[in-house]
Image (tube, rainbow, N blue to C red; front, side, top):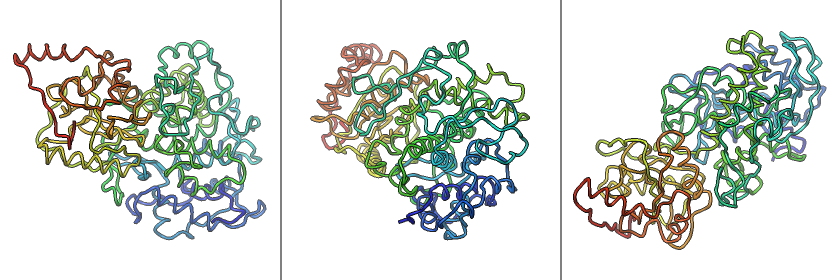
Length: 605
């Protein structure tokens, strides 16, 4: 238990000294502990235990320490964060065990070099998280004062600072607010300016459909809406922002804006950001990206940034005494903050969509680029950029982030659940496909609600399909758990073995469990009904006029179970008449009728 007068800000600032260059950046691969979120939490807990009693007169100024910084200078970070909380006690990281110190020193900086990603850790939910934006969000949230007026010119001092900021001179106007809502953090833009969205629900139960965007029933008010119709409205009507939210800037807005200044970030698969694989899941040390041309906006970075936003927002609103950070992170990457299973890392995308609107985020990205221009007039990416150009970059970046990341499901790649190699040579699909075939796994019969259990069930199904059925791989294209994640099977590009006679025409998506008498969790249902196909259509993998079919409509089977099939028949893309049409088409092509097939009751139905 930390001391009664423990100061969480002191702990975060001690770790952030590494980010400011006050500790040498070690060579990657020197840490001896595995790169796990649990190790980061352990380090924070040790710092909390060792945090001394502090008084302002005896503390060191973080800003003064950064002036001695032998490493890279970050004017934006100093301007937004350090000026508001100038004094902090210097916790000696040497007080940590050598193993934890080595891990923190290496994990606290995010970077991508070639296909290697550094500064990331494996979380208990199976996601990979960049530590740097997470810590930045915690620090911004602890300072409470978040909405800051933009300086009027290229000379500015950190708000609240009495000393002169290096390279700049004038004082910025006072901080405007203490703890804004992210949906209205930019008061100069209204819904009439850019077309406001309804993104104001955060579910408290992972089984509630409201936590997923764009659910088409009465249980959901959360939608991730396309910005196509809002871009011209923004250009024509929106005012140039006059404030920024320090929490969004240091976690997400700066990196979004600067990355999209380099050009559109497009992917050949749905979901913004590159995924990757750990060298080993039990003792992760090296993380290799699957895309050799990945930008810094990897999935791990966006995960860490979004976690920083969510937890920073929570801290900025939490009453005193605020919880120890190690305790907060343990809950968030565990069963849920303050006993709320919906407020945990598994559902970061859904909660992120509910926390901030796209119009507000456009203003934050735009305002961040303006601030960077004023703090760093010689910034190579921003020199000569007009307000209109910055607004267009902010709009494009926000569109991609909200539609291709927040609006898409989190998909664990095959390496994350420990898939065995494909046997034989996979056959490519001819995209886009026209069908989505819905299955239940039947066995395993119970839903999986945690990563370790879902991963184990994926390996079990793959063994059954390969060893018992004699197939090349797990049959499904994707499998949906009740833990908030989709698990990659054969994926978007390879023919599966899920719907006999139709495997090349549609994607086979199974929900873990037996849904003969019961329904899956609402989160899993909305993923299959809305989120996954919407992203596939956006990426050109699924036709916009795709049809949803239950397995039983094409093969003699009870799959996907009576309860699920009854609900499936009410979905917008469901086509009850597709079976005879496909049967006739198949007979014309093959000139023979396929025999009905019944899979054994002990396996895939």
